[in-house]
Image (cartoon, rainbow, N blue to C red):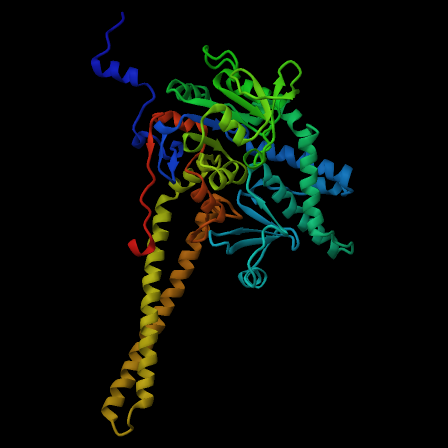
Length: 505
């Protein structure tokens, strides 16, 4: 027997997925750095790799390392022994910097101060880091390489492991290779595996094994389209790989969309970002039968067709949508986000696949993180009291030295004040040492929970990391996956929280 729904139930059925943000678990929220009115957004663009298509990272890294090592052995003369080394994925996180000249990998805070640093598997001590990296400002354009994408993590893992291997080989009598050459060989071998389809052919052969199929992705895209927004795909991947991945993600998910291409008003492959945003390369239409671009330059962009190359200037002219009316969602801080904010007026959203785990760890250790904040505040107060007592003791000593020898009573009072102040100062310094040990131990435990080598990708010690600061500066929104937008109205006003300066806290 069918029973009629009560009025509230009928209303809830009509509202469907719309819910209050307070009802959305933190790991599924969209976070805001800069106010953004979704009702003013007319067109939303998406990157594919690590944006619409999230990867099973451990499996992909293992494959990438294996194929790269094979290329290094066959094409660059490395010994087969390198295949037997222990390549641990945890040795790399996004936001690391590789010092190709010295063979080091390090993480910087938001002030570009070098924090944790490893030479191979050896962690550099504080004084060693200071001697290398505090005498001059880093020229990151010369001998340094920035690991800013999840695709780049295997480079760092292999570099650290092979630096350790080459250093041990040198101690055993064989000369060590140049570290710069080592990194360049790794990057070239990875590029070879991408260019000759070695890597992507394996992924295409086992898409469920390498790509996370998000059951809410199709509904998210449909909801955005239904609100009147135009959608486009802009990826650096070529058509054959894009077609395979997008079919796996979207085909057959909703009856109204027979093909994945039906979700998008414009589809652009081989975009060559960031060149798409700062060069004027032409668009070419893809022949869907052959998967190859046609020779004539495209002068309009039509739904149902696929284009290769192109540039942002022609895109804005042909779509009639530009500037702050366009939102682009990607994962690459440099190729997808930074260029758009520095050179164009597009709004940006960044997908941080790691954010899911970062939030989960933070929630699990919430009590310890609060304890650390409390201890840190108490230590600052203690250090302030130490400074006061040290200054007081210094002043008492000056008064004693200036005191007339005939003033015995005053001298006695000053000597007693000196004794008491020194005892108080010694006690405070003992407490400070104990508190420092406690803070360091708690901080180390928390950092290791995020990553045993590097801690949180968004922090470095008490500061935000350089990578975290770039996310803050250039991504208007950030979230762990595209389908998190499903919990929000397409007309949502994302409002950034009020940020307090130190003097306001």
